[in-house]
Structures are given as C-alpha cells and as structure tokens.
Amino acid sequence: MKAFVTGGSGFLGRNLIHALVARGDSVTALARSLAAMETVRKLGAEPQAGDLVDVAAMQSGMAGAEVVFHCAAKVDDWGDPAEFHRVNVEGTAHVIEAARAAGVRRLVHVSTEAVLADGSPIHDADETRPRASRPVGLYPATKGEAEAVALAANGKGLEVVVVRPRLIWGAGDTAVLPKILEVMRKGQFAWIGGGGYLTSSCHVRNVCEGALLAAERGRPGEIYFLTDGAPVEFRQFITAMARSQGVEPGERKIPRSLVYALASVCEFIWRAFRLKGGPPVSRTAVLLAGEQVTVNDAKARRELGYKGQVTREAGLAEMTAT
Image (cartoon, rainbow, N blue to C red; front, side, top):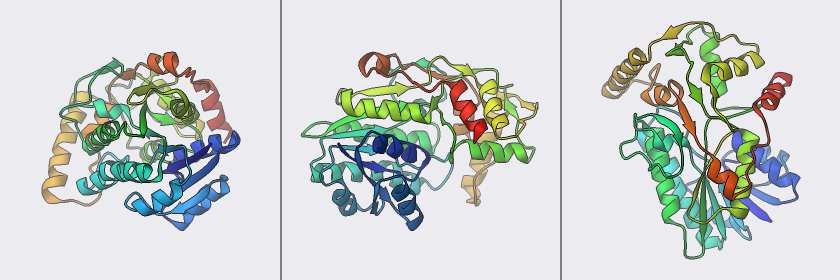
C-alpha cells in the first residue's frame, strides 16, 4: 500500500517508515526541514516538504495514499500553550482536512496514556476509562483535545483508529531517555517516592506493530492501548536503560508529595514571571513518571492480533549493543 507519515524524522516516525518500507510499502513522509527530508529519504521514503500548518502540502503528499499515520506531536511537559495547541490540536485537524481532501481511506492517530492524567491513579486502565475532564499539564490537555478531534472525524469516507502506547522506548530514542540521562549525568536525578511502583511500557517497534495492525484491522472510531505486556517496576526499568548507556542513576530519593508540591510552586512562578526555559520539575512529569501508570492492552491483543513481539530483554540488549 501507499502510506503517508507525519513526524517521519522523529523516533517513532523513523521506525514506522523502516517497518513500512521493509514490507514493501510506498511511503511519503512530511518533513519540515532539510535535515528531516534527508533523514526520511535515507530510510527509503519520499519526503514531502511542509509542516502541520500546510494543508496543501500534506494533501499533495497524501495523493494516492490508503492510510495516514499521524505521529507528529509536541511531547514536552512544559512550553508555550499556544505552540502546544497549534501543533497537537490544530495540527491534527489539518491532517484530517488534508486526508479528506486527498481521499485517504484510513487515519491512524497516535495518542498517549497521558490523556488520562488528571491526578487520579492510572492503574490497569483500559479504553473504557474516559479522557481526563481536567487534565494536568499542557501535553495531556492538548493530546486529549487532539484525540477528541481525531475520533470526531471518523466517518464520511474516513476511518479513524487511535492507538495509545505508554512510554515509548528503544535504541535511538531522541525524546524521553536523553532528557533523563542528562539529569543523571549532572547528578541531579532522584527517584520520586523511591521508584518502586509499576509502569507499563511499549518498545518503539511494538508501537509500529500495533499501528500497522490498527491500519489493517482496527475498528473505525476505536481506541487501542499498546504495551510490552506485563508491567515492570519503574526503577528497575529506568536503571536498566540508563546502564545500557553507561550511566548510573544513583540512589537519591525524594518523597512524592514533596516533589509534587515543588512542581506546583515552580509552575506558578514560571507562569507568573514568564521565565525562560522550563521549571526543574512539572506536575505532568510527576504524574506520568513519579507514580504507578499501568494500562491494559487486552483489546489490541484480542481484536488486532497484537503481540508486542519485542521483549524488554531483547530491547535492552539492543540498546546495550548500540
């Protein structure tokens, strides 16, 4: 088939393009810079110059495509609210507009478990749990809005399927792990609440497996969580990833109640005084990485035939080797 990918030069996008090309699909990927164009070209995809604002460019790149994979998003836990809305919410609406104009049959929207983040526990959550009505943080809020926009677009010739991976990881990660390693190398890392709680995770190639299955078998208008299987202790998992890169996380601990209060104060100060950069810690980070977050992917395994074929052991071994 012919596919169109947004966010093609990002961590997930690169792996998705590789998976599509490997099975013989024709791929066009949106690229907003010369470097991004070169990246997707080396992966075997045809770059389409433009960004999520440029509906005409996306429509041109989607010509003849059967499926669109919308992977692009602003994933930081702090930043300009207008930028978050422009990229995550308006960008999704523009992708949908372009897909309809190009006559695309199916859109796979990559969402996140963060759309549930309202301050209450996320323990073994499945797709019946509603999105947060009062999300905590710009990323959960705008990704929740984007998911709502995507699902509302299902119908009238466009089939929309949503996948929600939790904690995407793997060799070549340019999003989450580099930020954690930077803090560890500076000696500023501490385990929130000791880090002994459980977390779900999803290796990047497992995300690709789930996205491809959603394109083929997903029921229009449905949501599917994707994980590596059984949860793992957060501290154990992050330590293993850090050590694969030659970094020791250390033993420092900080009470969760203290760090959440600190995050609330820091966010207030940063907003009130419009300070540059981001606060040292955010409430979003505490909610998604400082307590148990586990989701249930039984629906994807039952309806899509999803398996999550890359084990944590294999993924960590690959990270160590690279």
